[in-house]
Image (spheres, one colour):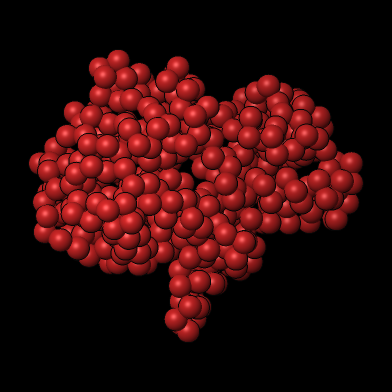
Length: 438
């Protein structure tokens, strides 16, 4: 079975490599020839645990190749997956231009039956729109007799856990408009479905597109709701950790995505929520809850700065502030919409000297800010600091050598944006400690 994956970003590269590892012949296609050349020589553009070794193994076994030639990449393929990382237009909605261009290329270059699979997160109705573009393109080239199908197969990969999510998914959603396309997708996913056939959802393309948005928005809603509860706990003297446990043990709710913190980031939550709000607006339906989720999260991203500012009574000019963790979550170098961005910008506006460290996101930081000191390690970052702010709960930050940290700091102040540390222990060691919801 031959598959092309268009897009060598997170979704495309992880999905393509996993398909290859299941025995499929995969070509990862990208217009960026320099990026393709780097991949050919083993330079992986994203950080994902275990991905580099999996790519090397499948390239060596000749099941995984890379190309910038769309014509050759689409010719004779059983499936072409559109897995590009979407970006926002000026109005905040998803920019569909690259996806529609790929659909035209598909219609221009296919030579026999093939399934065009939309894996990128797209507004409801996009897959059907893509189908029309392919049909029109085939007609224009005088090849209207070539048969094809479209499908929507949204991804549910989480950065840092993408390989496991693909190989052992909670569910696979397959949206098609014909039985031929459904059977083709079943053959492609046969290896995974052998062990997980109860959690495959077959539906039409519009419903498949909506499932992705609804799932993302539900998770984001849980995060923002618990952040609201955490802030209220802090005001009234309750303990969010105990509240969270009490809520999470309710079998109707469960323990996932109810950890309070300094806000969510990444591409998925912010973009999908914005798209659903826009979709509602286009149909005169006000998505009030999702607007509130977005507002709560934007406010929560400022919570650590607010605590710091309150501690120093508004006098932050000249203070040295250290940040641990810059990516929006552990096990990724992705800083998209990360709380660290808002925090750093606020600190710099207040006249602070900012020192930072993240295990894998330092290059992205250097590209974004020229006047932020990037530490050689987590201890280098805290030298002379008046406060340390934890924004991303990487494992290496969980049990620091606290006496070393204290000896390096100017003022022993810790602001824990992920409720990782034992506040009583730190206070016994001479630190001032703030967290969220306690």
